[in-house]
Length: 593
Image (cartoon, rainbow, N blue to C red):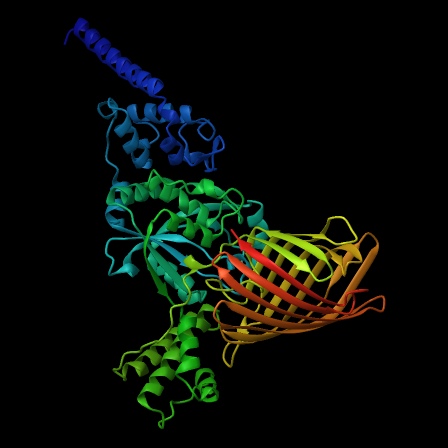
């Protein structure tokens, strides 16, 4: 080829590229494609910026705050085979091709081996929202959790994959996790891992029941979800316990999967896992619900319904006692099943090292295999959380002292609430505000609870968890003066899901400038859910304060469920530290939203 021909060819190629790029740019400007709502969703944009905080999610250095620059830089990289955009962001590329007619022929293509292997291994045809319920003795897990399961076969869910979002942390202390999570001090990352590992983590190790909600998505929508999960797997967002948490970020995947969904904008202040499932119901996304009980559920079922001689079970489990020959075959199976499950529970709590655990476990499996009869658990499916009351509450009370009280709390549930769909005994409140108007005074702030947790974990012959509580906030002390307050307590709880009794020892610490009030006291209470839509409770507490103060208080309450999000509450209070009106009756309404 002579010099003139080479020059002509180079000039032609250069002009073609320039013309192509110019045509694409002109099309984008005319259509303002960068203002398309779906482009915003692909980049997780809200309020003028992306909620993804890692730089590797953006092609442009200004991509976090500038949708237009990010779009043009993405196209430029595609046309010049830069930044591996073709393989790193397959859904972006797919959407750009669909919306820019001339782009397909301008892209430099090359193999994407990792992406191809990922799509092949996931082979997603079904998507399920998974909801591990609350963990009663873990403050960081009292709200529950949500993640997605993607599977190729409805009949073999355990060999499917889970798409999860969680804070990256090695902290094991629940209070430290909650504190750092409140202020976004963790990186939240998406991960894709085998579903059976999540079942092991929640169902077996943490002893949490699991609800599975099958979602009504088309194959095209499922493909989008899977591709977007791939785009996110190496990026992170700052994790905020209250809002930008596991459930909130999972909703982004569903919005990207189905363009007409508007989910994340619904959660402006807080995202409770249970609420994030309920919003799917409003879009008719949920086509079926399934319940998967935990190993703890199995053990409780065996303990309460299949074993009469519980003293012998305790000896059989904790000592190397042989099975009593006088037992029936069914009883022997029950004892062995319980011991196998309890051994797994002990291993999860690091009571055995791996070698000792495997030795004992294999011996028990061998013994169990000598009985050919399969195990069966008649475990009742509990109230579906989808039908429970919502997590925020406003209350309005009239007091027999001719006063009115207005309460507002954004989350979550307390001892007075009907527990349908919630874990009874696990109560947690944030930012609970109470305003009072008496006949003699103006409106005043009566109480503000920054954080209140009460974990009434029930004990039995085998399991011995402690109950505990913490209450931190501001309140008027018996209508006398306003103080900062902290109340730690610990104790024991006994009973079942319908009825339980608890006793606690604790201290009230009140602080105001140089003035302090502090007490040491005890309380005992009883709760019953024996009657449908009705909850009853009674509590007696005694506190010995400094400054020669003693306080005896009795409270009796009942809550009646009128509708899913409406309940009536009546309380009788007898408190001897009130200067007047020692006995009071309060009647009010709970409205949940």
